[in-house]
Image 1 (cartoon, rainbow, N blue to C red):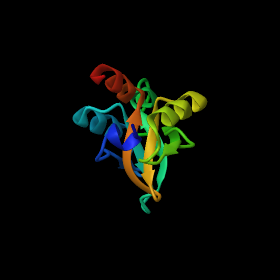
Image 2 (image 1 turned 120 degrees about the vertical axis):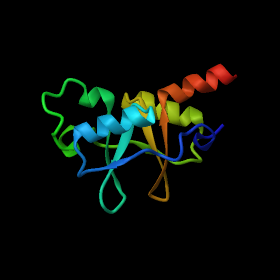
Image 3 (image 1 turned 90 degrees about the vertical axis):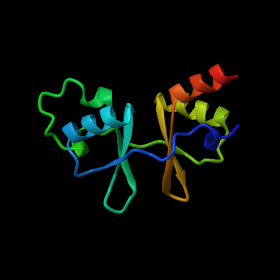
Image 4 (image 1 turned 60 degrees about the vertical axis):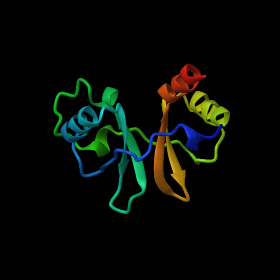
Length: 119
């Protein structure tokens, strides 16, 4: 099984110019807990999760100040086992899926639960 079989695509993303309030509203509307933050060139600059935003005293703060970096990524052809190892090694719950540098999906620890549940 490969990452491409279980990644979420298309990806809900936002830009570095967005603020935390916009990111929170976007995540709520789309039903996701993590979104990549991209630059104007489309390159992934960071990721932001609901945990990053929760409890901020001021949600007008720019995402550049709250997003997590570096961003860890895998390719769509990566095996699920290797992706799981990467998550454990990096102690993260989300991986960005890049194909030749282009954002094509997201993989979360919850996707592994789905793999087990669907057997």
